[in-house]
Image 1 (tube, rainbow, N blue to C red):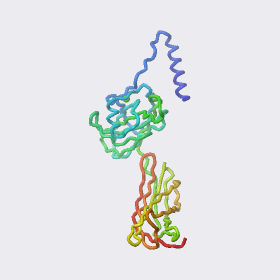
Image 2 (image 1 turned 90 degrees about the vertical axis):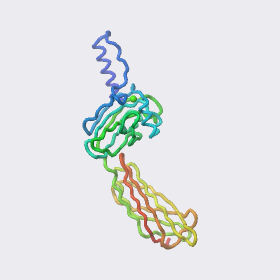
Image 3 (image 1 turned 120 degrees about the vertical axis):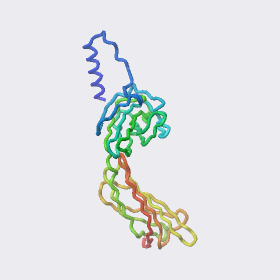
Image 4 (image 1 turned 60 degrees about the horizontal axis):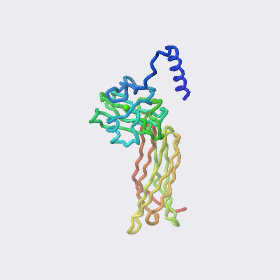
Length: 272
Ligand SMILES: [Ca+2]
């Protein structure tokens, strides 16, 4: 906000110096408002700030959004980037003054293939020599205006957060409630935006297949922590003995997620 006020004051001063004969500044869309005018990104990391308040939207934006379903494609601006290596990249527009979304696509109008899109930014796996359109839009999730102070950074994507999970081969079960208490350890990197762990437990009891499902929050601070999860049978009580479990965990950073999947047989033991 302070920056834009300073810019306005500077523009006003310039106008005053030129004198009253100067024509009033004509509002115009930025040069990269449309696909043909896409600004070429020559080197990575690339950072740009741009006033997109006069940028417009057109049929090319609509074609991209047929895949993604953003609430709006207002104030779109176009960049073109040819990858020099097989690498994962992140186009990050979160520093913009408005609710900016990012699309990454190959192809040209009529044959666009959207590789990634999302509010705030988009990450994708690039192929050396391939040219990508990077489009920043105002998705109107903030409910008003048209563009504003757009800020875009394109760089090599950070790796997904660290994620290491163990599942204890034994679980406690409560003979009164029939619930099972699964446990293990989890290490989740501090760079994770969010993370979760879920477990499904299946046990044959007589003629019934008892199933239960549970989930727990995960603290991501780069240290190994114990986790426990109480699973209650949806259709009966768990008993002592063997049980099949499927444990799934995910930790997601700004660009990518790490995932963990374990299917194993564990032993349910009483004692609670
Ligand atoms: Ca546009």
